[in-house]
Image (cartoon, rainbow, N blue to C red):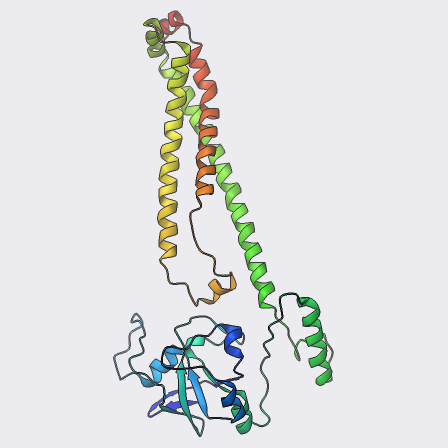
Length: 321
């Protein structure tokens, strides 16, 4: 339990080494710091607090609200907190970070103390996890296998006993999530093309109905000198305008959605971190492909109705009902 005066938080601090920060990208706020090697060597009683934990412990009393944004109103650096029966000095507060660390704890509500200091007070304390950052050219699967063998041998267990040792590769998890996103994009792309094809069939039917309804008008125009090419172009342009208006509306909605998503503060979100921090954007290459596809479908869907209109005999057209 972490206590400041009459306030407390029922959670156990995470005992870590100074290298833990570089492996998890934790950022202390200005005026504070992370745990350093000297803290480990001298087993100092120092602690780094998560942002919202610091606010809960040190902010003045105020009315609680589910909808209020938590803001740290005082600087806890240099102040004392009690962890169990021991007094620790706050040396840093982390920037807001809604992500989770590998044990499932929320960074905003976590606290971190030197591993050597914690072992001084908890001689038989368990090691909850070990973080390993392999070099770029290392075979990650072989390294994971070696780690599993070393830990299993130390505890006299089978390498397949997941109750003793579990190895999670965050890079492979991120890669799997990215592959999932690529598959999702492909699926949505197929749906988009099928939708465009259906739209093309619909426009073709509308154009056929339009040509049939306008047969007398076509005959009148041809009687006063309109050429078959002019008649054909009239219906092709009409089809293209219909497709382009729908496409412009769709692109406008897409741009608005991308802008709205981009404005959401996702930094520090656990799921966003697992995805590899993708940046939502409307690619101009995609826009060009969409426009080209719309033109092709617009021309293809109107070609037969336009040809039919161009081949109408003026005399027959004027005599039609």
